[in-house]
Length: 240
Figure 1 (cartoon, rainbow, N blue to C red):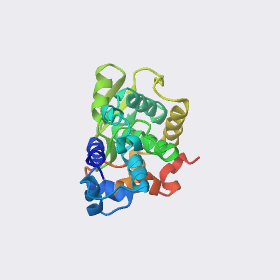
Figure 2 (cartoon, rainbow, N blue to C red):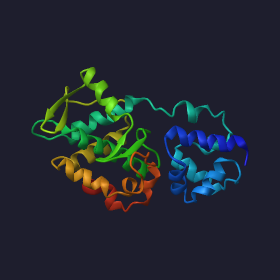
Figure 3 (cartoon, rainbow, N blue to C red):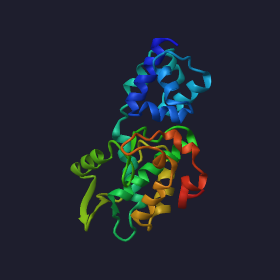
Figure 4 (cartoon, rainbow, N blue to C red):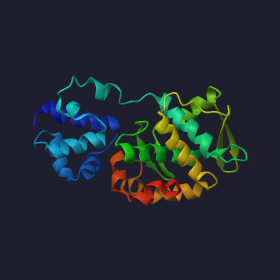
């Protein structure tokens, strides 16, 4: 295999924050085999290239070096604008009906479910953000920064409630300009399904999912792991 192909694979994996072992597991090969692929010592099969394309969320042409290579690496750090709209709509539909507030942890889980359920249904993430295994469930790398920025610009309000941190919208409506109609509807369905349920309920649900169980603490969670899950453990109360 050419050095360019192996270099493309390595760069895409590192950009996503995945370990070699994670990617090897996700595409169904041993870690030594995957290491040899990245080192250019083992040829990449068509099925492996397709699997890598899905796991690393890049085009096969980008992996093989057929395109100019700029698209996959230049926009890996997706703009947070769309991600913020996912958060805002999760607050709108998932917050408590009585006061419009939601815990920071429950909000993070709603956003994660929206991203991973969308991937399950469409083979692509909604936001493209990288999620990691944290003690209270999967959280994206930019989640806390996004909350800070939206609080600073007056979009959301933060307030303590015992040991929890609560968030609410400053305006009643949430923007959807970066979301497709189908994406907005999925966020609404998930939020309304979990509305009224406790933070512990949704944390326990995500802890039972394979993406959280398989990965090590602090590891990036490949979106493709959701394909290995049973449907009822993907949707929970948001069953179609």
